Length: 66
Image (spheres, rainbow, N blue to C red):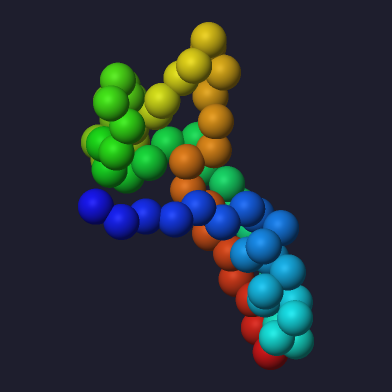
């Protein structure tokens, strides 16, 4: 298994460094896949992982244009 994690600032700065303009950004408090042990299925293709009743962002969408 291989994975890596990038901070939001790394992702957004990489887009800006390439001269892109961010038009849209949204975080979602669920994952469409059950990727966390102990995640709860909230709805079809919505899995949430709560820790001490804190819901964290799981995925995001971003639209950037040149």
